[in-house]
Length: 263
Image (cartoon, rainbow, N blue to C red; front, side, top):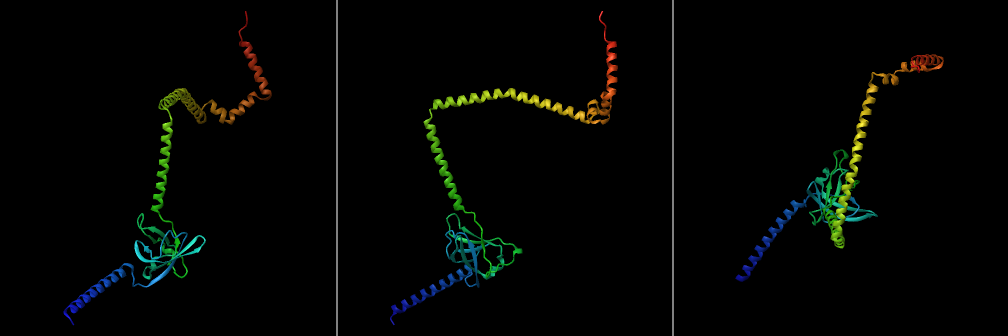
């Protein structure tokens, strides 16, 4: 074998060895990252819309990658079923009432599926019979789109306002504003007497309240007339029936006697 052939063979051997080592390092790294060598279990989730989620997308639980989306199929008129493959060692942390959320990795990043929530009382999730339900996510992209729409509407309003202001004669606008200012001033002066009257009425109402409270609290003639049944009975006897005639006659006679006589 020639010396050049031996040299080339050695170079090829070294290259293949280095390539094998790199591939082994990559496989180990991938295995650690995605739990490639762990036992896996398939879960089902029901969502109204896949929102551009793709097979192979990451599945996260509490911020950790535990699997990936295996398949996405339409299961009904308003339902999409997502099958996800996760490491079975993470299954005990998923509960029957856990939810799934389709999220973005940043504003324009890739879609991924996130498993959220779940209570201890609900019990462990059973992949054979249970289905993860959907929970709407906080969509930054949708909010940004709404913000853009609001900005567009505000810009259109400002353009229309500029056109309207350009069509108005500045002199007339100034006159109109002065007239509005004078009208507001006149209205203020006109309402001043009304405010004084209202203050007087409030003062009178306060006095009437004090009088009523004093009468109710007693003692006094007014309190006795209103609240004392004995006074009422005395007045009724004094002014009622035959006794009223006698009393009235007595007062009339006395008044005549005391009346001054004409010269």
